Length: 327
Image 1 (cartoon, helix red, strand yellow):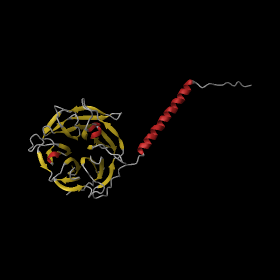
Image 2: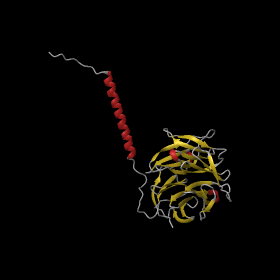
Image 3: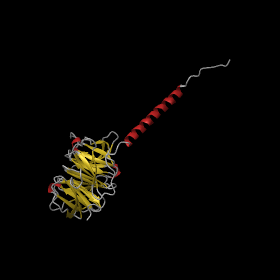
Image 4: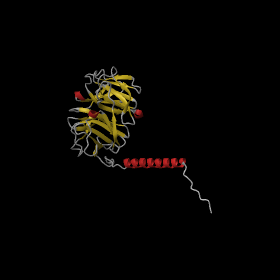
């Protein structure tokens, strides 16, 4: 009769099998999350390349939710960052309009919370943010826990009352209402220039800036004007020929076009060579009603203009044809 013996399962075999099951479960879970995220419906329409006039692509955020006092916008090529001033954070959206999270801005020592009012995208994945609660500019990177990690800060005595920022590569332009100038900083936050000190009249309260090739376009909000300066010397090159109610922000649309957000007039005006050539409002773009448009950002790849409205708590996405607004 054959010798039949019962063979036990080695503990090592059990451990290997258990580990394999756990690993497989993690992989399946990760794939499930990835598929879920990738399959989320787009909020914004794809650009219509055949359109001859601006078209509303959608409104952020989707659904009934609202942003908390959206005051500043920045587009870095893949993500849209929105300053939610009253919440002390940035809302983050992808190119299709899906919300990807929030970045909490750490408060400065002695401050209850941060108050992000303006933002721009620096090179290398960094963001520069005006924190008016602490009269400072912070350069941050995103952390894994959703908090913005402060890399460096620019405060007094370098700047005393920062109100707006603009970026060109690693160069950072900071408007300082304390002395009516614009300070320029390099990648190490060392000041390399001061612009506007010789202007007459002086800048009053700048709320938005944009770089258009070698020119710096400045929304001098309290003075109701938009001026164009030489980006290196700060010399006055001109003023946009329009009567603004309250110009809050500016952005370069390419081909020499400049868009200006006019909060009181509830519209966005487009200029070429200093003269108004087009208007975006409820009448010209159905569905693009504006109550208090406060900030602008431009996605050059899609020809898409983002406009934040602090009163409605939304961001409009408007597709602007490449030749629209040209003379």
